[in-house]
Image (cartoon, rainbow, N blue to C red):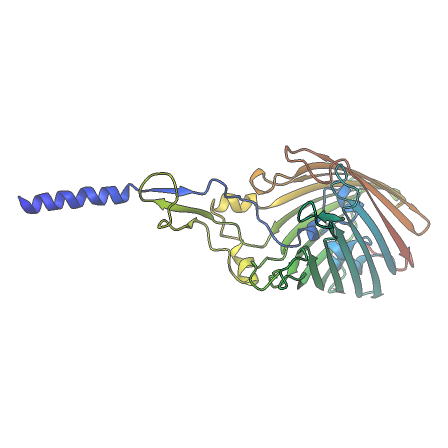
Length: 399
């Protein structure tokens, strides 16, 4: 009888142990964050007018920032680009993204390019107390990159690029260990441009491209600080040009992108005393997902299978953009695009309109964004513009 009582007590105690509740952190976010996120902002108005895409669109002067492989398919010998994008223009007037780039086709089968982007966060004034002198800081971030493209066949080319990234956001305080953060990253890209083919009522041409960008080591702002991933991302795109006649062309393009960095895991703790409050003896652990504290290369492969929500959440991490561009005699262009990001991954959704015209050797492009999300875009109702100076126009003949 005594043994039966002991067994019963042990059984009920085990049930009590099993009944402890696992409580997850209600503030956990499914949004993937990286360092130097401005590197993912579209620098040019043409790409912005198509819904922030550029990996598989037809070659232009801004290919350096999207897919450097396209430089070897450009019909111009070389080109210089300039652009400026106001940021949070409804609130301030001194935050913006500026860019400049240059490309040169060395010959029929090779080209090189350089690009520079500078993101200014304006002037920020800090005051320790009412008696201290204000300290003005000017946080900024920048990237500087070079690329080399090689044509591997008549229709396909690839490029490699090297990028220097620098983020100077740390305030100059008493922490002597704080410095501007910097790192190096690499790009691997490819571009396909098919021959013009005859269909029933029009001619057509297929386009396709891919890009793996900002592939490089993590960085941190001080010796004891947290390491940050670069904005490593994958872009895949496909497009088709409806060549209606020698004057009119309509190009449609679809692009998908995904950050190649770990997804934040779902954290929680075992509420052993069932009071709903995490105590000192109830450690936090990963309830679902994987540890994101891994080397950058491991993070790239881990990013395809570490989402707490499984395959469904992995698919949600892809953004997509759809764009259409009408051109007349390569002199005028009208554009429209749509960009979509899942609600749990940032909720960026917007429509975009754009236009461009060519005067002599200069291309002028404009774009305007309309937010379609409850989360307001910092670029909403912002007019963006960019310039391209075409040097040696028509030097090369492409399909």
